[in-house]
Each structure stands twice: as C-alpha cells, then as structure tokens.
Amino acid sequence: MTEERAFWLAWAQVSGVGPVLLQRLQQHFGTLTAAWQASSAALQAVEGMGTQTLEQVNAARSQLHPAEFLVSHAAQNPHFWTPADSHEYPRLLLEIASPPPVLYYRGIVDEGENQGGKALIGIVGTRSPSEYGKRWTRKISMALARNGFTVVSGLAEGIDTEAHQGCLDAGGRTIAVLGTGVDIVYPPRNRKLYEQIIEQGLVVNEFPSKTPPDRAHFPRRNRIIAGLCRAVLVMEAPTRSGALITARFTNDFARDVYVLPGSLDNPRSHGCLGLLNKGATVILSEGHLLELLGSLPQIDPAPAAFEQLSLPNLEPELQQVLTTIASELMSFDAIVQQTGYATGIVASALLQLELLGLVSQLPGMRYQRC
Image (cartoon, rainbow, N blue to C red; front, side):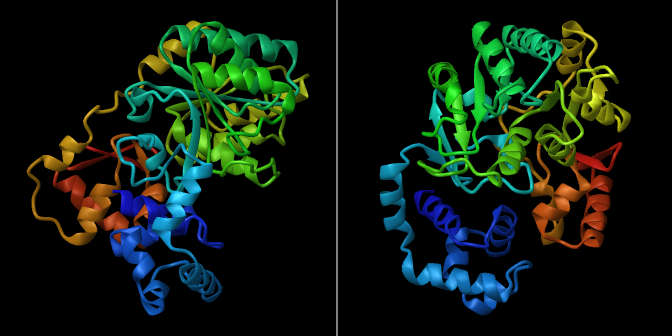
C-alpha cells in the first residue's frame, strides 16, 4: 500500500480538494493512484470537481511526483497515517464522511485504540470554566481513566486541560487533537501538559509540522475529536462555543452526546442546557455515566472477517452501500456522503439490504451491518 499512501499524501496537497471530495475520487476510481492518472474529462465526472478545482489538480499533477514527495515529506514529518494504512489509521475515523487524508501523530501509539478495541471518549467545553465545571471534569476524566477508557480532548485551556490532566493523574491514556502541527504547543502555557501527554498518550492532527495556530483549524480539529470517539461529553459550554460544534459533529456521526447539567444562572452552562433540550443524555454522576458507557456495543475486533463471509452476488450499488456501512451505527446522511450516490439510490439499496438480512435499521435512520 506504499504507492497508494503516496497518492493520499499528494492529493492532500491540492488546493480545493478536501476530505469529502477525496472520498468520492477513491470511490469513483477505486484508488487515488488511478484518480491521479485519470484524464481531466474523467475527473470532471466526479461530483464536486469543478473547473477551478480541476485547474488546481492539473497544476499539482504537473509539478508534484507523489513517490518523491512522500520521501521528502516524511523527512520533516516522520509519523503519519493515511487511509491506505488500514491497520494503523483509526477505524472509527475512517467511518466518518470526511476522514483526514493525512493524520500526523506524536507519542505512544496504542493499536487497541486505533482498531476500536479500546473505547475513546471525548471531553470538551469552555476555555473559561467555573470551579464546578473544572471539578466535575477532573472527577469524570479520572473515573474514565480508571475504568479503561481513553480520554480525548483538544489541549485548549479550561475544560480540555482539566480533562487531559485528570486522566494523566489517574494513570490513564489521553489523546490531544491539535489545531497546529504536532510539534507546536498551543496555548504555550500547556507545554508541560503536552510533554506529559506524548510520554503517556498521543497527540494527533491533520496539519504538517510547523503549522501555527489558525482560527479556521479548530472546527476541523473538533470533527476529528468527534470522529475518533464512541461518545463525547460536553462539560460546560456557553451558547457560542466550539464545544457545540464538536457535539454537532458527534450527532452527525451517529454517536452519543452526554452533557453535564448546569445552572440557568451560569451563562457557561446555557449551551449544555440547549443540548439537553435537543435530546443529549444527562450525566447524573460518575457511576451513572460509567453505566451508560458500559452499554455501548462492542466493536468487532476482526472487521476483515465480514468481507470473508459468503455473500450473495450483489449489484454494484448494493455492494458499495454495504461496504460503506461500518461496524458501528451510521446515519443515512453519512452513508449518502460516503457513497456519493443520490439519496433515492441509497434508500433503495438500504431497503434491499435489509430484506436480504445484511443490514438493520435503528431509530433515527441509523443503520448497521447484521
């Protein structure tokens, strides 16, 4: 897969080609290697490949040689995964509609986390929490660590800092998703915490080394937090908070959102109360949360085994939809985005797969393999 890895990296350098379009290119051509070698006319047949984007693609293809670029890029960024690295790239992240084409990392890799055998739980919230928010974030992150969960957050001030530190203090593993290069510490005052994390956990992001902080990077960071995790906890958040962006992504990815309840008198809790009003699950205590998380369905540790089962000969659209549906629940919208098919085609395919006993539908138009 080294060749395909080089092409994931190469495509990631093309301005205007984002994660969703990359997914469509891979599905249309079978590999990104084939997509790179395709004619302009063939590329224009892919939804989202407009004239301006095609010009950027052709300029990149005339200047960049993927195999050579892989070698030079790895000299500056020795540790990264692409979706071609199927045994290393985090499984749950591959299940979202916009997985990062390149995921950089630094620290200690845990194969169980990447393959879904160990549950990752996100904790997010305001950068200026109350003492109540800090105290409960520490208590919950320590409880999660002591019960075998890995805590994921964004290394920001406030709730993120409390989540990482509580997990580390309990001897657990934590993952920080950055909005910078993995060699840049932001905010700078969290340098000591950053150094603890790379000794006891992992830092990841989708930006190459030396990338400084930028406002546009942080919503992208939030989608990775949601994509890595089985569930996300929002501890304290006002109505305009990046934590609510993470919660929205979590819902879009058909995963669970849990919320620490707060006071109406505390503006920092208004975003959390809004999430509860929209159906998020309330956290009543550490024990209550652990009980809820304990009921999360287990992920099959051998996903490749499904492909080896004897299946009926399926039409191409049915096979593509079945392949797209992950071992966890997937929303209808996520399936549409990942396949690139029209909603009517996906709906028809899902119905046929249900009748064949290969897929089951759950409340909220969420689907899973049988």
